Image 1: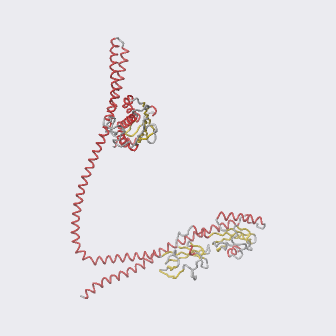
Image 2: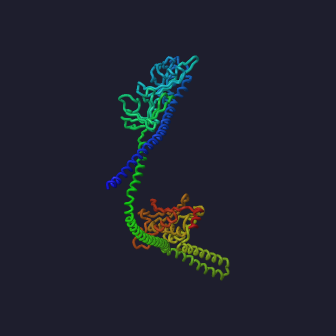
Image 3: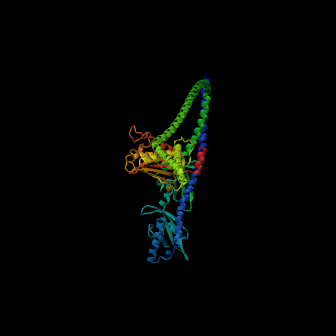
Length: 581
């Protein structure tokens, strides 16, 4: 019994120890690989920062070499020549953002300077001594006047027999740092004495590693897989554990160094070890509970089958309900479409009813004239006046043609159009609407101003001829209704072309009382019980124009109302689209 108990717990314990050892090995390997990758990236960042600093300072070196041979510096023996040279150097400094540009004689006296930051004598400066040896001199210092950091380039100026002086350019180190400050990990450049002179972290300036009482401080240096790891304290802006790399920069006489946080590398290694440990523990746990899962699997399977059966029944019922709702919606849409078509036809018939009296009068007049001309023709025929008889027969033919045209327009307007949309001549459609409403306008003594000749020919739009005719009949009738009781009754119709065709129907009535409601169904300003309509004309017109892809809007003009119908111009691809539909 004790042996079984011992085996029961010794196997999991041994498994856990093996997992811990394996995880430790994976962590060590992963940390080493992450450090190698981090070192490669950090070396590239350090090289980039070093090249950037060297390149920016190189500009001032070239400036010193080019300015050294300027003719204005050839002879500085007189005060006037030194003043002119100082003006030149000041202009050079202003244009290049240099702290100072000055010329020093062979004995170290500064003869001409832009700012004079180095004082009257530079004979003891290392960069000047180097220039006097015939080579490019470099150096750096902190200015006494304002504490700014300057980097100096001294170009020797030669004369027969030796060096007669040096042209010195002082670069503003702070200006050099502005372009890369904070863009990389902590990067700094230290002099041969170990003091940091250039850095993208302000807290590292003038810091010297190993100096007493400085912050930050390096408390420990460790080497892991050939990489130097520093432990840094005393700065919230520097990593606590940092990879340290350095590179010599002989061109500027400094050493470039970088500190990169190794916490990401530690996290990567830890995640790898944790992932492996989790996989192993999960595998062990699966082995440990496999028997228990076998027992519960049958019960879970039975419960699952029951739930699946119930869910299948629910889905079948929902599917049946959805099919029923889809069928009801399709039936409702079909009924709505039929109702809309019937409403449009009812609107046309209502308009015909309003125009019936005038149309009857228009047909009655030609009939009476035909009767009169027929009687006159018979009388002329009995008298043997064949020429006069022919004139009467011609007039009878004209009257018959006029009646046929009126009846044709009425039949076309009254039919239930089902043809697809296509090319429609707006001028012809407006002309038909004018003919249909002419009797009513004549009876109401309304002046209609419409001239088809102003359009210059056919204007083709995309739509349906009969439905567009109904739109303009409704607009003309509404305008006529609005002007009941007016002294001056004028309706003007005009057609405008452009990206979209525009037809304006303007009246001289009292205007629109409630513009926001004018396209609502059954909205009317007529008296209740009036025979003038049910307030569906504008609503029907709005729906018809929308079906053509157009728009209709109304507005008050101060002297009446104007309705603008916007339509798409007809194009050949529209005709193909209509045929396909």
